[in-house]
Image (cartoon, rainbow, N blue to C red; front, side, top):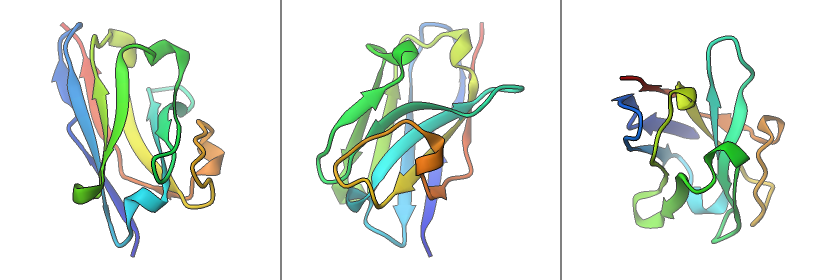
Length: 126
């Protein structure tokens, strides 16, 4: 059974950092493109970052470029999202998702992902 589990969310002050983890069970994460998405109350779920399978490309939404970094640790079967210089507008539930069809490619559309985690809350507030 394919399962994704996010962790690492929490409450942080503006300007602070968090590292989110997306751990997989039941499949090898390196064979999948992984996307990070977020959804704030009353808003649509938006793509934040993604990393292609097998050392493929990465991409970021403009609002997080230069602040967020996505990476893989294949030994731990985990993808990370390092979030620095956090802003109140980054507050949302963050989800990771997996796609097996985009070999090496990376897209930020939620409609292209098949498997989703349960989400982790990130709150940026003083």
